[in-house]
Length: 291
Ligand code: C2E
Ligand code: MG
Ligand code: MG
Ligand code: MG
Image 1 (cartoon, helix red, strand yellow):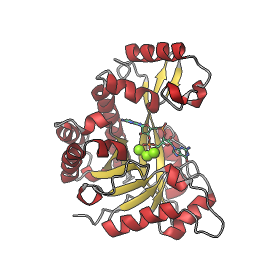
Image 2: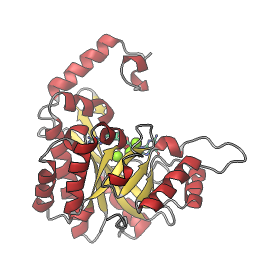
Image 3: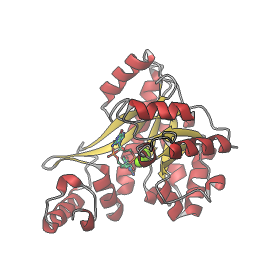
Image 4: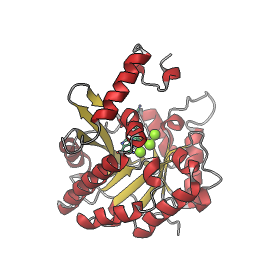
């Protein structure tokens, strides 16, 4: 039922269409200025090296702390922001916040990278590269400290725009990740000409059920081999169990992210995570060997 009403938000499974429409129009009306009112919040989820669980990067994940509705997740309000022409405001806030944060970590001697998710709308903006360059400059962040994540589906929806924007970002020295890779919006035919450093294997590949007698995580392993052949790093998304991690280690996967290591968390918790798992000093995902 809930699915056919345009979403898979099971927590609102029982809500009527009317309630959902009211909620949507309320969110649309109240989103403008949410950044200035201090209602947006960034959580950070660690990305770790598979071999020794050393943190290498954090992914910035957006939340809207709505004064009446409580926390609203990005899968609900990012599409609303896009439809309402507010994604520049929201995306700009995310970029500033994440760059300010990584600048201060680096100033404290933690050379971690921060990954920021791009909206399909940002991918299509001709001046987006210049916006990013200006923000990096403003916070004196070295470009290789920033990873931009573009979803496979968004890239496939407009390959020329993605090549332009991601290529421009990469020319700046920013690292580019292809997010949700392997979800069926296959970028495979374009992969060789996409300016990509990192493949993020989607959670669905990692959670793939294992058939007795077959190797664990065969699809994840194919993504790892693909990354090797193309000179790209591979990050496995949504790793929840020790079994999944050992299958990934056996497949030679470089990096992983998921609840097994840590949930998206506030800054203080990330710092505690660094202290615990890296003596406070994370390292970075190595440069890709793609030219
Ligand atoms: P994503 O970029 O693929 O991010 C990973 C999502 O999986 C996050 O959901 C994260 O909390 C969740 N996750 C991480 N580890 C696990 C795990 O082990 N198990 C499970 N079940 N889930 C895990 P979240 O934070 O709700 O974000 C959802 C999506 O919203 C993101 O997917 C991304 O596409 C989008 N998003 C998040 N922040 C932003 C943003 O600042 N801007 C834009 N444009 N989109 C954003
Ligand atoms: Mg992402
Ligand atoms: Mg992802
Ligand atoms: Mg994903």
